[in-house]
Image (tube, rainbow, N blue to C red; front, side):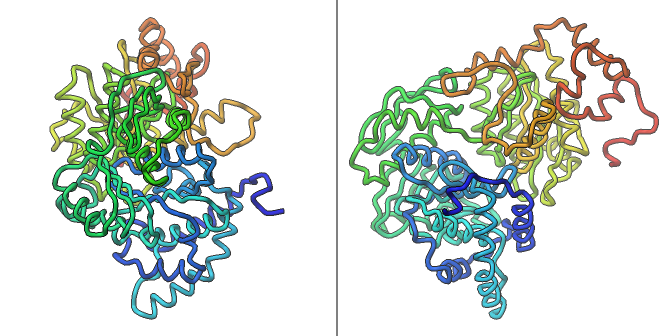
Length: 556
């Protein structure tokens, strides 16, 4: 009996060991501009990158959500699907999925152990020529191809790491090349203009293939179109060959009518929020139509089921309703603006408490400027920032984030700085509970912050159930509170009501409970820290009682 016929047995120690070996290689943000190392690795393994046809995805924002939507549509056609995306939120196995689920630990470990000796051969060849050994991302890419060949899968949905032309995934020959919206990101590696970045991303378009592109700035669109014509590839652009006919808010997300390459699809429920997710949906639809030849319409029931059930963790993901707590992986100005529009449309909050951590290579100043424009200048509500850093060595220090937020024009009085992420989250959630109107917490800025926040909040949920065995976290964390829309998500009105739940209690009741907890008395019911799921920061207790022994945050 093959391994895949056995129940998946968790092997976190084995996965951690493999992950440590991968991390010992050059980091994924230091990828060399080359393809020969990965090409040699997949060749020596028997051309594993050609084991199944590939739908290849690049772009600046929306790649992972689009990949998940493409996967859902393909699964609806009873195909076995491999999906490779990056980075991961909590476990490295999330990067390599089979039929929508992270590859089993045992498979991940076994295939790595099988290919490792061959990767060492490639390492030796590279270093003998004075070139770097295979990097982290190059090695994970090869591992993904090997796992997909071993399964095997019928089709691979492949997301680039950075760029396109020199990305490790570009050893594959995508039959469909998908380009999501292009913006300014990774400018140190891809170029400083949209045309330069589009040129790099157009590298995934293959001769005789099929380009499917989201609507682009004309500067980027011209580059993509020229590349497709040069390579004699078919092409379709959102707004020309396909597009969104209509979009309206609905229970669980939004209701769409989409025009694909081969026909129109009315009344399509999408379980994700925001105009940008509607755009991702129609791009995914056109990509799958193109994969099947572009001439026939997909079954409407398959399309509806796929979009109604698709999930995209860390993308406006609701993880709690009291207080309303949302995770969003926006990590550049374009992503922040798209998320802000969706958040405003779907949740209609009067008070937003944003926990933000950003990585060093990102445009932090631009992100803060966008937050000011969207959440302060264009809003009548209040906006507070809680700055912290993830555990990533690439994370910007909270004190530096504070300086950048001030440079962006945000008010000093609206900013708090924290040494630890859990304290920032707890304080933001506590403050949201005090608001007398609809309030919520947004945790955003980087994938690393989102991943750590999910782990912190999920660990608390597990601790609240004594005796429960540890289980692998689902892609979508259950939100607290009893509600469900048609797609398992709350409607905008339901979430807005949940966000204001604390306001329905008498102010004295809320204050008495928290003061009792801080004063060492037992408040009725669960403790505040239990309720929030995280420790309160020292800065909160200092505000009420003072602490002569505590140091200023800036000195930590």
